[in-house]
Image (tube, rainbow, N blue to C red; front, side, top):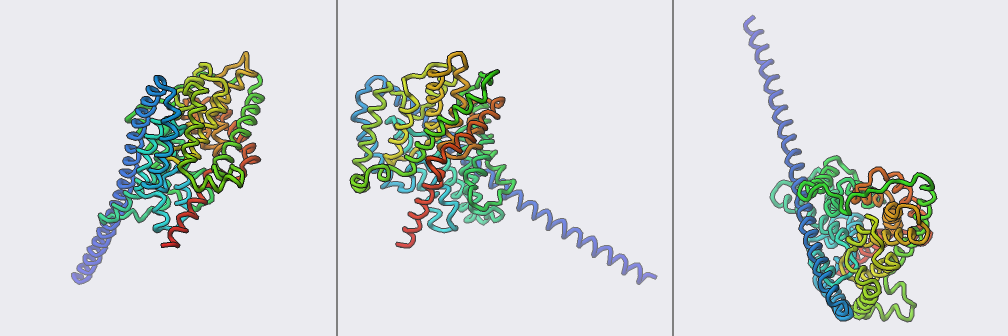
Length: 459
């Protein structure tokens, strides 16, 4: 009897020990998962802080540009050609993969296997994009900070994951491409003060044609970057609160008109950007453009100066103030500001300097909407046509209608207009494909991918 009792007690004790060991292992597993999630969120916080600092620098650059351009507008014919040529030279010397928007580089990196080719496109060397974009804004180039925020955000998140690996706490549960995408989308969310737009951008634009798992924790990291900026800077829409309402009659017709005009212009815009300066020139001149990139950058600076003189400087910089003013119902600062901003952005991009196209594209759309109102819209609310055109032109330029509509909605606080924003964005995207069949970002991403692979093969 005693032997049986001892045997039972031993069995119970063994089971208890086994349960304790299982719970301890489960606790350690949970602790490791929690630690990795915390590290991921720290990376998102770093992305948000970098984007927030960049935003402050951009505001300062735009203020400096307004000061000198208002007092000494004629200097643009000297400053812009020399400045853009110098910026092109600095970009080639300091960060050859930092030119242009930054979003194509991230998409190119996501399509490459892990290795040096991938790291070239999103290395910490691309942080040079911040001071170079700052200088471009001071000069008056028609560029935005959102694309650079995307590439730098991806670089910061990748650098953070590699640091965690060196410290012995690797983020093994997360695919390297997911970390790059999380940093990039977090950079966009923080730049626009639009957390939801960051998630939609990650899924629609970065995930297009690429197999990503999109774990819940990765999307949480994107939202974290956006909400941290909201917590620091306040829950204020980037372009102010939209106070217009949908038309009681004829809203569908106005929406179709906006998506048709902006779809055509946005498709032409994307085609010009995708082909580049050399690809848009006749064959007799394209070879010369490739041989003399700095002279071409100076020529684009001269084009920018001429457009600035025609519009009293309204085409310089991001165009944030111009778009916000027209969205609030103010008259356009100059006749044809939409087309002038379109060509100013193309010239700045063709100069080969760092800088995004998101905000300039929104300003272009706002100008087109104001022009439609000026021609045909007497008796209707200008603000509605400006809002619809902003989303439609951005969707046409990027062929990412969901991202365009959600970005504009969050930037303007226009949630009641979301249905019409979606309708305008989807229609403009369809029209745009007739002029630019391939999405601009993915077309340029293919060139960066081939360029980095060629460099690796040469090494």
